Structure formats: C-alpha cells, structure tokens
Amino acid sequence: MEEVAFSLKTYKFSKASLDFNIPNNANLTVSFNPIGTYSQSTGVYHLCFDVLVECKETNSNVIKVTCEASFEFNQSLKLEEIPVFFYPNSLAILFPYVRAFVSTLSLQANVRPVMLPTINLMGLTETLRKNTSVVD
Image (cartoon, rainbow, N blue to C red; front, top):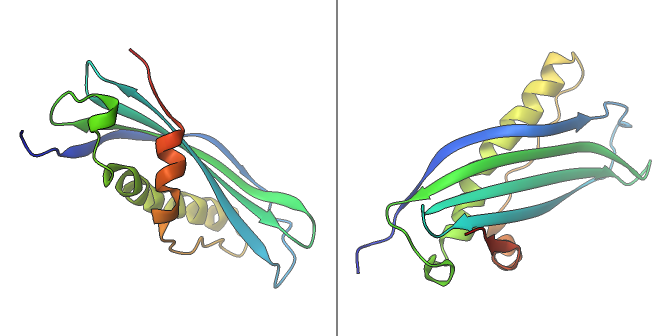
C-alpha cells in the first residue's frame, strides 16, 4: 500500500464572537469541539473546529470561533483507513491560524490582545475520530 499523505486545501472562519469586557487577571478556560466529515470517493476531509474561551469570573463566553478546513488525502481511503496521526495533526495544522485570527481581531479592536496559548491537541484525537462521519 502507498504511504498515506494529506495536505490542507482550504480554510475559512465561518463564525467569530469576541467579548472584550474581560476583567484584569481573569481566569480563562479554553475548550474545543472538533467535528469532521469525510468523502471516501474524493478523499477530502472537512473539519469544523470550534474554539470556546470562557471567563470564570463572569461565567461568560469571551471568545467563540469556528474555523472550517478541508484536507485532501493523496488517495481515496475508507474512513477506517485514515491513519490515527491524521486527527491530531489536522488540528495542530489549523490551530495556529485560529490563534493568529483571535490575536489579530483583538489587536485591531485596540484592546489588550488576546493570546491563546500553544496547546498540545493530542487529547482531542479520540474526540475527533468519534465526531467524524462519512458523507458518501
């Protein structure tokens, strides 16, 4: 069998919400909800990556971003043939774009920039695998 490779084809931000009324020294928590759909006939994987940042002090969402991306495999695979490394790597490829987007929005708003930390996304591997469905 040929070695499986994939590449990022496209990405876009379909939703963004930032609330800049964040208290100084606020305790923020970051959560993720990745969902994928895969076309076995074309070898294209569509990833919808939701990122939510909540403020503990105000019990409110301060950042909500949805980034959608398409990844293309070098060959058509069945869903179960997608290598395990794809799931965390697809998120790791997309996350720097999310971080930069959030930082740029807050900077352009002329408020203290919001910087999402670098995060090891390996813990989302099973979540994304379970949240992946076949579309054809």
